[in-house]
Structures are given as structure tokens and as C-alpha cells.
Image (cartoon, rainbow, N blue to C red; front, side, top):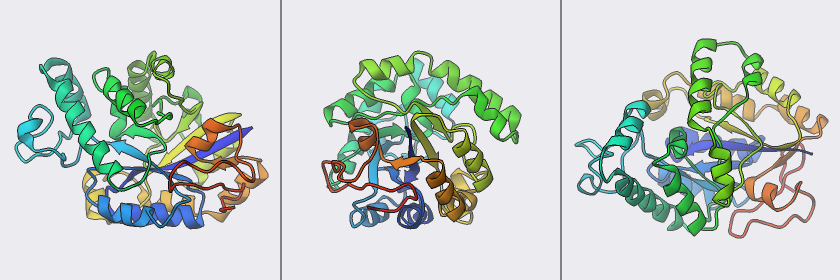
Length: 310
């Protein structure tokens, strides 16, 4: 059985991204979203998610490229003088190996973000991190601990297969470098995730093609989908959004939005017998059928192969 979770990352980051995620869920093929507690438009995202119980919502812990929740005095090793996280993941990642006490500061901020999420009344269906920082050896134990404490069982492994490079050969040098970096970073991560009591998708797409998952690319992905649970994660929105333009200037947000709303892709999913699902349903049973057990919160929903709510 081919099961597909289509997830909108960075929910709460920017207003246009929030609007695109909700629209793609109601009228397209998006089944899930990862809500960023320190996003610039977090409250707007929550206002959209609460009356949309069919959207499965997880927590997207952020330690880069945003404003921290806690004051700098409590987490000086991971923020600058303005209280913002560092911008460069390589520099930040190396620093976290060297600065004494940094793991305690990361845990304090991550807990503050989890508390902010939980205060909304939403229950997280999954947990992941902005820029995949849970793959960092210092960060992973913290994220795993938070997930276990709150009964979360789904955590992404940011590793994509070499074969996916052949689906789109644009930006090949950058993709090869990214592929090598994350393969090294995630060595043994799937086993650590399993030992910690989590399940991860059998395959993901979005790591190498990030910001450029257009209709043509997704058509090729869907035709190559294998049995098991696959996650494709997106960054929809508007390209003229000032927040997205600042932090993701090379992303084609509009094309990702268009792809998620594509009638062609909806038909292709149906014709290929792919089952659209969400994280908890993929854990509970091998496919989402009529009468599937709803999520244990206000988040619930089953979808047919065309992406429509049942």
C-alpha cells in the first residue's frame, strides 16, 4: 500500500504561508502541517487551524532564523543581542558542540515553544524541527524527550535517496552537497529514532528539492512512489511575502502552492492508487479506510484518493 503524507512546513512563519496551507488542505492535496511556535504569524496560523479539524497539526521546533520565545538572558548561547536565533545552521551547529551548557539552553527554549503550542489546545500529531536540527547530536535527545513526554510518535529522518536526484537535475551541485551532508549527519539516526519509540516515514521528498516542488517534479515523484509511508513536505505561500522573501528568497513558494492545488496531481494520486493520509493514521493502521479512528484531539480527518475529506 502506498501511503502519502503531504505536509506544510513552517506553518505560522508568515501570513501568506498560513493562508496557502489552509487553502491547499481544503481544496488541494495537503493533509498535514507543522506549526512553528516562534513563527512571526503564529497566532494567525492557530486561528486558521482551530476551525479546521481535518488538518493534522504537529509542532515545528525552531532554533534558527526567527525570534526566540525566551529572553536572551536565559539563552545567550543560541541568540544574538536582539534575541534572534542565529541565521547560519553550519555556524550554529558547530558552536553547539563547543559552548558549555548550550544543551540546557536549547532544552529551555524548546520546552517554551512546546508549551506555547500546547496552550493553543491543539494536540501535536508529530514533531520536527526547522532546518532539520533534530538530526544534530546535541539537539536530538532534547526533541526525543519532548516528543515522548507528550505522546508524539512520529519524527522525520531528513535523508533522501540518491535516486531522487534523477527526478530533476536542476541545482545538481547544490543537491549533491546537501545529500552528502545529510547522509553523514543522519548516520544511525533512524535506529536512534526507533529506539526512542518513534516512527519515521519510510521515504521523504522535499529535502533536496526544497522550495521547488512544482507540478512537473511532483508528477515524477508520484509515479516513482513505493509501498510504505512517504512524506512530501512543502513551503507554499506567496513569493512577495516580506518574511518569506527575507528568509527563503530562493524558494518558489507560488509554484508549490499551485502544485498542491493541481487537479492533475489529484487525479494522478487517485489513478495510481495512492492513499492520502496523515501521520497518526499511518501509525495506527496500514491505510486510512472509512470509519478510521480519528486523531485523539480536535485534529481529525480521513481523505479519499482525490484528497477530499470523507
